[in-house]
Amino acid sequence: MSTAPTTRRFSGLSARARWVVGAIAAVTVLVALVVLARWAWGLAGVQDFVARYPGVATGATRTGTPAWVDILHFFNLFLMALMIKSGLMIHRTRRPAAHWTRRGRALLARSRTRPATITLEQWFHVSLDLTWLVVGATFVVLLFTSGRWVRLVPTSWDVVPNALSVVLQYLSLHWPQESTWVAYNALQMLTYFVTVFVLAPISAATGLRLSELWPKQAAINRYYPIERARAVHFPTMWLFAAFIVVHVAMVMATGAVANLNHMFGARPGDSLVGVLVFTASAVVVAGAWLAARPVLLRPLAALTGKVTR
Ligand code: HEM
Ligand code: HEM
Image (tube, rainbow, N blue to C red; front, side):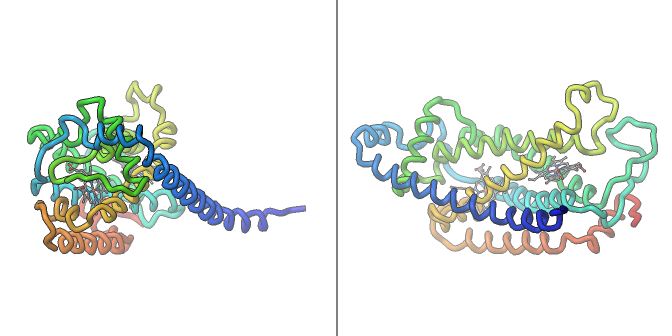
C-alpha cells in the first residue's frame, strides 16, 4: 500500500507543527529561567556576585560612536538582508531565472577553460558578498586604527563573570545600569565579537569555497572539500538570523530611542534623530528586498556579463 502522498501532506504539516512546538518550548524555557533567576536574585551570594561584577568587562570603555560606525553598520545590515534573501533564492530555486557568464578572463581562478557560468541567483549573492567583504574589511581596519576595538574584543577574563551577571540581570528583569554610549556590557561584547570575528569569517571562507572564484586545482581542496563548506555555510545563515532577531529585540527592549541614536544618529541622548534615520533605513532595506526580483536582476547582471535564459 502506498502512503506517499499522505506522508508528504503530513510532513508538510509537521514541519509547521515543529516550528510551533519549538516556539512553545522556547517560551516555556525562557519563562522557567525568568522564574529561577528572580528566585536566585534574592540570595545574598547572587547579590554579592552582581555587585562584584556589575556587567562591563575591564578595559571595554571608549566613549562615543562615530559616524563611520553607523554608516558601515547600515551597509552591513542592508547587504546582510539581501544576502539572506539571495542565499534563500539559491537554496530554493530549482529552475534558475537566467544564467550569467562573465566577460573576459577570470580574475582569480587561474583556469584556461571556458568562462564559468553561474545562475542569476548565484551572481546576485556573490556580487553582494564581495561588496560585504569590502565593507567588513573597512570596518575591521577602522576598528583597530581608531582604538574602538576595545569595545568589541575582550582583553580580560572578567568578561565571563560580567557576561553571566548581565544574563542574570536580564533574566531577573533588572535591566543593567549602564550606558552603551560609554561601553558595551560584557554580553554585548561577546556576541558582537563572535559575530564579527567568528561568524562572518566562517561564512566568507565557506562561501568563497562554494563560489567560482575558488581555484579548482588548489592543493587544499583535498582537505577542504566543497561538501564540507556547503554543510557549514547554510547553518551559518541561521546563526546570523538568530543573532539579528535577538539583537534587534534587545535594542528595542533596552532603551530603543537612545540605542537608535547611537547606531543611526551617531549621538547620545533622547532626540528623535536616531528613530527617524532608522525608519528611513528600514524603508530602504524593505524596498530593496521587495525589488530584488529576476526582472530587475537580469539587466543589472547584464552590465558585467552575458545573461542567457
Ligand atoms: C534592524 C536591524 C538592526 C538594528 C536596529 C541594529 C541596531 C544596533 C544598535 C542600536 C547598536 C548599538 C547598541 C547600543 O548602543 O547599545 C548596534 C550595534 C551593533 N550591531 Fe546592529 N542592528 C541591526 C542589525 C545588525 C546586523 C544585521 C548586524 C550583523 C550581522 C549587526 C551587528 C552589530 C554590531 C557588530 C554592533 C556593534 C558595532 C560597534 O559598536 O562597533 N546589527 N546595532
Ligand atoms: C563572503 C561571503 C559569502 C560568499 C562568498 C558566499 C557564497 C555563496 C555561494 C557561491 C553560494 C552558492 C552555493 C551553491 O550554489 O551550491 C552560496 C549559497 C548560500 N549562501 Fe552564501 N556566501 C557568503 C555569505 C553568506 C551569508 C552572510 C549568508 C547569510 C547570512 C549566506 C547565505 C547563503 C545561503 C542560504 C545559501 C544557499 C545554501 C544552500 O542551498 O545550501 N551566504 N553562498
